[in-house]
Image 1 (cartoon, rainbow, N blue to C red):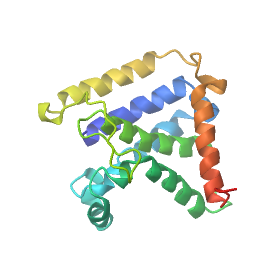
Image 2: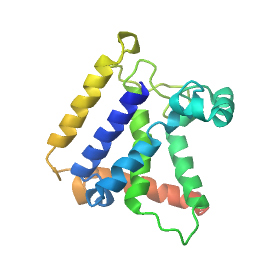
Image 3: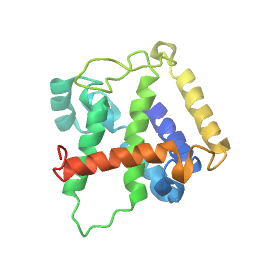
Length: 196
């Protein structure tokens, strides 16, 4: 998927997450926190490709990552998401105030990239280092990015149309329970209580 596609997909994801109230934090999120935070990280998984938008600007990071893991390897896995959250929590000073909606927006942006790449024939190795590729090949890059742009813009339209707080989402829905489980698991890993 192109950088443009990832940006539009991240915007659609942020709109949908807020309107669907995927978590209580996202339900009450400030649009000026959620959308920019998602945009900030929506291209980050492609740091493993030296010719990507970020890879060209940060070659000193991109080239070693590309040599070590290849494109669509570690950075496109759920393990990368968990490690990123862990590193982020370790490096943030305790007295620094970061709104929860910004952190969830950044996580959403990163995840939106991975989900968008699942729509291509190459797929992503969600369970890296296992090489299984997860894909739903709706987009073929050989046909140009017109289909990609149309699909992403349609997703923005759907996200805007989506009725806010639809059942099975919201404060007691399955996305909140899933997010809380993941957040608690990462919290236990960060605090060194993973095996207890």
